[in-house]
Image (cartoon, rainbow, N blue to C red; front, side, top):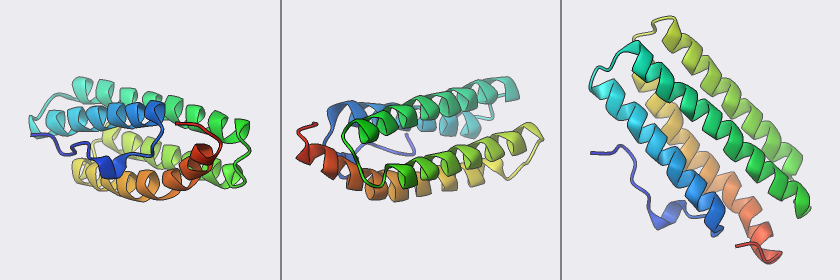
Length: 135
């Protein structure tokens, strides 16, 4: 059973971004399932790398849209993205060092990110983009 299921409450009303958020949910669920199943370090490392890489790609996409459509808080949003990537990298490094509490820390971080970032600051900038005709 997946840790996270997509609901309309996660939607930011921009199809391409919603699709990217769904992909992130899929990767997070894959990581959670692998941790629960006691998969080896190599398998978990591969999923973690995919999560970090896809998150960077997704954030870059969002930032380009914000700049293109003149979102006034784009610098602040970009800084938030940089902080999230830093936290994700720190969690990954701790995992690679053998931190046994990592799975709980990762899932708590990812849940906070989904609720706080996607449903908070992402919805602010997407409202601006919607007003510019971006759906």
